[in-house]
Length: 437
Image (cartoon, rainbow, N blue to C red; front, side):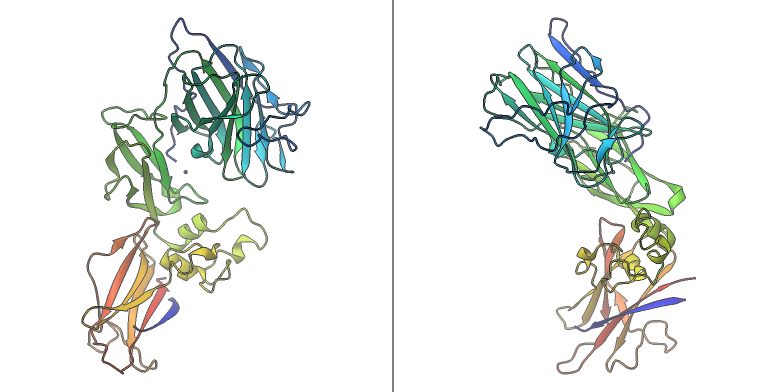
């Protein structure tokens, strides 16, 4: 049995197969234009020396030959390009705009020949999902006029397909007088490959999409589980929902990685794998999947795409890849991130005393683990340590009821010493964590 002693001095994505672009119901008499980027090829995908000015400023001309124009639809003047990076951006072998490092930031430009009252913009991507909250519309009222604020989208949504994600934003621009417009959006991580896009402008207000159901899981480097969702009474997922809709969500474990579903957080609650939520203006459900063993935890938490030092020097129980003094075994036991020091204070066990003066040690414990052992030891001299079941026949501690469910697969438990903390007499509590082999 491998042991670790910690001394405490007292007291994204469900996987759907029907993801696609949203095709709005356009009135027969409406005028509209459609710009489609089936793939990206040729041109320079990044514009290094150009960016939108501050509001009220004047927009510089686009650099010659940069950006990508459309290759389908009836609008061949729309342009999309990436901004904000000095290097590491290119067209991949499969025709996607891919960034090696940094945040991926994009600008789309179009000048419709009619008064646009609806703007629907969608992207097709693999890897990182675009940041839905990053999209913003800017516009000008006349040629070479100052830049004005068109605001955040009135609707947004996304669906994750078998291998691609479709993300959508829609603006109701019926109150604006638009000569041309610019859409900014971004992906927070560099691993997104922008595979395609669709831009639709309509001269009537359509309101095709509502609000995205935000979904999170405890997947990090492995897809340990996903979330399926659809309107209650239906079977197919939607890229967005209307406020007040009752949505059925189901958490599904990926059995290959050794995790269990242990509960919901955010707008959902309970431990049933299937539950319902009522859609609000900004609804997020988090499916919490917890590891059943150390190897599954390490596969999900330790970055296998880093090669120096190699993975087998960072994923063992005794390794400490982030150098915070907590080896992986302890990070696993307490729900820490093995390659992030920012959680050091959060995962530290905490000591306190109840109103009667009995010492308490509180710590985070993996909910689903079947290879971990935890015990709290007590001592008054730091030489002789005792614990329940140590063969002495005495009971030294008791676990308090109602542990607190955390959103990472752990629960916070509190263990109380049965020895009163008398004034002037020392009492020490120690947490022992071990792997059961």
